Structures are given as structure tokens and as C-alpha cells.
Image 1 (cartoon, rainbow, N blue to C red):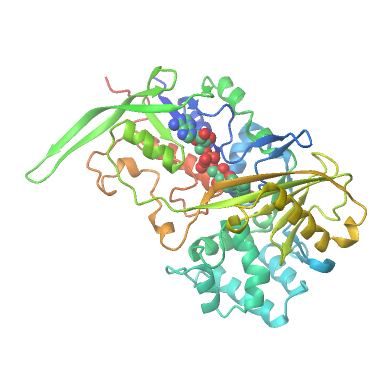
Image 2: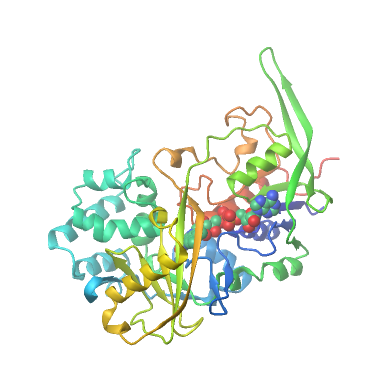
Length: 465
Ligand SMILES: Cc1cc2nc3c(=O)[nH]c(=O)nc-3n(C[C@H](O)[C@H](O)[C@H](O)COP(=O)(O)OP(=O)(O)OC[C@H]3O[C@@H](n4cnc5c(N)ncnc54)[C@H](O)[C@@H]3O)c2cc1C
């Protein structure tokens, strides 16, 4: 008989889990408490210009293989624009620009050659960066509990190289400052993306809204005999004891979830459950279900502030640029969504998240005009929108990165204070221990792994009697 899996949460982790579970022969019920899918990566209506925008500009890279698997299934990979090779413009006040262009040579050679040709850094700084890249590539550098800044200083990186090269990379990929981010995550990003093949390093920029990429999940599930329920939360898991081990000192019961209670009161019979919800929602759900587990305290959350500025006409000279020496860090031309619209990003935006939207819009417009003065003298700002995602991603420091629980944490009695393993539940989400930063790819990978964890067990249809 076809096993029935309930997936709680239709963010990118839950969507990935649902697709993999269906592909492995399961019947899936994907349950999402909000009226839309996508979680922290979705589109919203900007009423100031009556245009759909994303809750924050998302960028993917060629090495996002789990994300690409999901989008392939949903038939939306053609909504991504793939660079031929890594190409980034760095722009600063006064109109100075530098270009990192890795297209001249294949793979990592292209990145190295592009760095050597890039202006704005001394030859010595570029040589030091390349030396460290070679060491990363050879896997002779380890994070060893250091922050990115500590590692970079220990590896003789000059301040100019840190400020003008490493800091933008860390902010964009780890959503944290170079001074607090876990160095191992930076090493992973460098090895997988920047030092991978030419395709791995190329940036993938969505040409359509994030929701357009994943909205087909509902019809996709239906076509495969499965369902999605929006505006419905998973509220409680019913467990049954499966086996009990008792010896002189320990008494442990293995549990199995047989029913899932959702917010309309329905109780769904299940063979397996994937909880693809954020950490706080998971704690609540387990508490309601009397499943005792105590994870280490969750890490702090790092905010991302996104600003959409609508000008009276298109003006950007390039598709996107990294801004140096300004509060705004990245600017993307969104003329496809609306001519004249640009999207700005401030990662690890703790320093501006408390400011008013009006002040942030004025600051962003002023900084853009400082950086792109030749292109903006005649353009008028017509409106703007600020989106503050205060819990954009978990902040993985060298300490908290080591406390990320694995996707099989509920089945693993070794996790703190847990003596009742729950056999047929696995976890997904960007906050789990995937080895990757909290990104779309980390989320999609965790979803696939959650299915693999369940499949290792009884998911082949032998429902307990
Ligand atoms: C502004 C911003 C910019 C970003 N930029 C990038 C980027 O450029 N590149 C990149 O790779 N990543 C980026 N990220 C990170 C990326 O968006 C996240 O890592 C990813 O979306 C997390 O997905 P998830 O499925 O793990 O979690 P979530 O998206 O949080 O999904 C969890 C889902 O569970 C639902 N839920 C909670 N409780 C229940 C319940 N009891 N029952 C049912 N449903 C429930 C929630 O409503 C939610 O939909 C960015 C994030 C933000 C906020």
C-alpha cells in the first residue's frame, strides 16, 4: 500500500520534501499554515506601485543542485537567468566601478584570472586572496571554531581585501558580518560555488517573482495523487508506543506517530511525518504533542532589510551591482517587473532595521545617487517600499553553527534529554545541520534528506496494524 506522508510547512524545504516523497512513491499531504507557499522566499504586492515584488531579492548559484531539482520538477527553471560565468560589478561613491569577470577562462581559473584583472585592489591583496583560494581548494584550511575575520587575518588577508572582497561575499552568502560568521560555512561556500565549475559559480537571478517559481507545487501534487492544504496548520502529533526497552537503569520507549491533528480539527492517518517548520514552530508543535526533546537554545536571527525604489524611468547601467562603502550592499535592476524599479538589499541589517521606512528610503535613494551619479541626474523617485525580515536567517557563529540539530534528531535518543525516540518523523529546514548556510539550497537539501531519513525506515508501505 502507498504510504501517506504529511509534510508540515510549504517553505522551500517542505516543497522539496513533498516532491522527493512523491517521487519515492508516497502519497503526500502538504500542510501550510499561511494562505500561500514559499515561507521566507515569496512574492508580495507592493501597493505603492501596484507591482508584485519579492519579500527580498534572492540570488541563487549554479551549484544550487537541490533547488534546481525542485524547479525542474515544477517546470520553472526557465524563470532563472543564468550567467555564463561569475560576473559582478562593484560600485562605489563617486562612480568608481570594478568588475570581477570570470568568463575568460573555464572554472576556477576564470575566477583567478578575473580577480587578477579586477581594479580597486592592490596586486599584493589580489595575490593573497588567490593564495587563500588555492589553500581552500586543496582543503588545507579549516574553520576550527574561528569566525571568518579570525580565519582571514590568520591567513594574512589585508584589511583592504577583507573590506572590498571577503566582507561582501560573507554578507551575501551567510547574511552575517565577517566578524561573527562561522568560518567553516565560508569555506564551504567558496569550495562549492566560487571554486567549483564555471556553471557552479555562475549566479542565477530569478526573472520572475519567487512565487512564480514554486506556485505550481499545488497542481503538481494534484497530478501525482497528492494534496496541499493552505491556511491550515499542523497542530499536534498523536504517538503510539512501539517498543519498550527496560534494563536496571534505563527505561525507553520508541514512539511512532499514527495521526496528525490539523487546525480544522481533522485527524490524518499517517505513515510518516516531515516537519519542515522553523525552530520556534517546531518547539511549539512538539510541546503540544507531549514529545519531550530539548535542543540547544536557538541561535539569534539575522535580519535582512530590502528596499524597492520606483523611479520614473529605467536608469541602471547593469543588471545588478555590489555597492561598496554604503549601507546598501546590492542593487538589482527590476525593469522586467516595472520599468524604473530597483531592488536593494542590506544583509545582516541590524544597524538599520529599527529606522523608519521613510528614513531608509531617503538613505537608499541618496546612496544610489552617490554611487550612480552619472546615470541618475534626471530620474525622479516616485515611491518606495521597505520590507524588514527580522528573522531572515539564523545567525550561525562558530558556536551556534555546531549546535544545528540533524534532520533525524527525533529518531536519535542521543539528543539532549530525549529518551523516547520517535521513529517515523524527520525534520527539514534551513536551520538544520546541512553543512550549508541558511539558504534556499540548504532548505531544499534538508527536504531531500528528510525523505531519505524516512525511507531508511518503514516507508515502503508496511503500515503498522
Ligand atoms: C529577505 C531574504 C533574502 C534572502 N536571500 C537569499 C538569497 O539570496 N539566496 C538564498 O539562497 N537564500 C536567501 N534567503 C534565505 C532563504 O529564503 C531561506 O533560507 C529559505 O527560504 C528557508 O526555507 P525553509 O523552508 O527552511 O523555511 P521557511 O521559509 O520559514 O518555511 C517554513 C514554513 O512552515 C510554515 N509553518 C510554520 N508552522 C507551521 C505549522 N504548524 N503547520 C504548517 N505550516 C507551518 C511557515 O508558514 C512557513 O511557510 C533569504 C531570506 C530572506 C528573508
